Image (cartoon, rainbow, N blue to C red; front, side):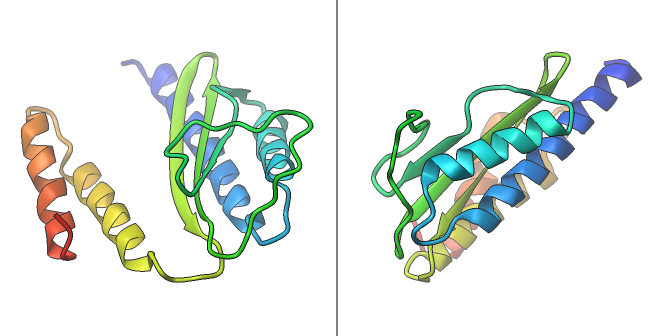
Length: 149
């Protein structure tokens, strides 16, 4: 990969992370899901990137990849488990980032922390020559250390 391509990936990643963090700050009881989607997508476009895909906000039992319709009135509620998935691109070089947010409760705080820690450990150990099965074991060990199987 040449430097120009690398820089485009990095810029797409920075913009996606900014947009993700903006989305997290907006997720509160009573806020319309569609309003968060529009603000997050607007930030990506304002920063000069394109959308890799529509912003996905999946709540509770919806595992992933839900995008509200343009007339959706659904709002966040206290206790919701929200999965926010954001992607941006610079000239087709894509960055994708996601986060799980618990709205004003802490019932799943430990599980969310375990997942984030597993991801951090996987990324930290991702190097040229490391097998995917080794990364899988690192993830499993991290999750197990939190008491999950």
